[in-house]
Length: 70
Image (cartoon, rainbow, N blue to C red; front, side, top):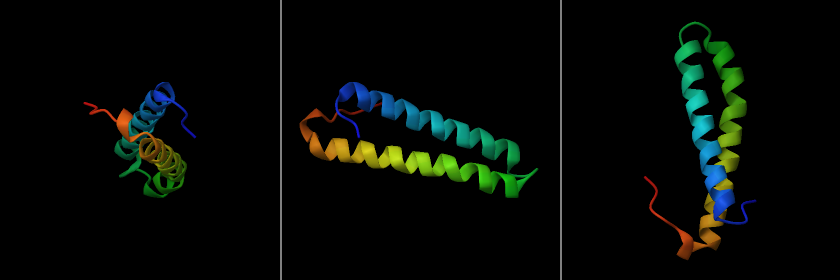
């Protein structure tokens, strides 16, 4: 669970890192080994969903602290 803005920034960074890693895996494995991609990507997708859930929960609890992020 995210407790403050600093932890929110870390969670957002982790989410971006997971997205980037998954995109790289797709680029490397989609054509060469789609079965492996399916297995390996599952953990990334699960982690991204958990991060998104934590981020949404924090923003719902702290609506005044929401900022536009570029």
